[in-house]
Image (cartoon, rainbow, N blue to C red; front, side, top):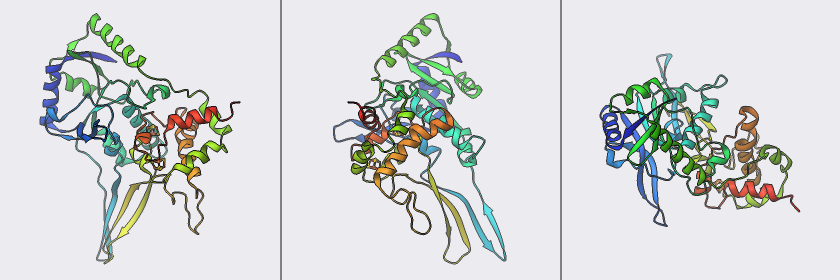
Length: 346
Ligand code: SF4
Ligand code: SF4
């Protein structure tokens, strides 16, 4: 990895350059919650002042810029005994700025599924390839457990990654494109003092996490498959699906085929779906493989911490706790995992 430093005024120059040449999406405050705490989303910005890099967490993840809630996979038109089909991929470049390490790690996990060898999605890949990513270090957010799932640091999956050193940023460069963009402003070579300050900043951040014990979780989950824990938490679940919508790594979807009333036009429409919704596992003939709430909730956790682990040797979850923040029933991964760990203790 190549490192440089960038003074705060030079960083602003860099952002102004990007704003003048391409679409920029960045964390932006959109209001406050009932406790007066600021709420943020990743949104398109036009001016440097709109960007808030001090944000704690965005309510939605950056997933929506790569896996939109709804997208047209193809459109077709029938005319004179013939038909034409149109498929659009994203080709316009854009910058996605201010991603925390967990959200970058989430994109890397989605890459494994949607840009890997088995089921590559050209729609997802075109968005990934045309998005320049600038990440930034931050202190742990409330309820987050990214360190416990190894998602608090990131070594690839970005173009530039910033660590705030007070009067300057320590910048990790991870692509040719990142290097070329950075060279448009006055980035400095790192000194011994910069390296020392960076390592101390990282230590400070690492020391603020409260560890969540994830030891042997896949095996524990297999042993606790029929546990009362799932019944207790399942009873609370409202089957609203909000947890999966905000999750940066949930990618389940359905595809509808729509045809206009006159039969001349049609479209294949992909829409994200949630494994917590009542009809997620309903099949033709009326049978529902996951008719009760506890089973649906359980399988979501098994996918995140057990099934994905088996295939990719890492959990799907990046520990952001967005699902816990959004859940009106108070269901959250740290409490469920602790419950599983203490369930059979005497
Ligand atoms: S766990 Fe919470 S957010 Fe998810 S479906 Fe159940 S009630 Fe909704
Ligand atoms: S399951 Fe919850 S904590 Fe894990 S990545 Fe998804 S939203 Fe974040």
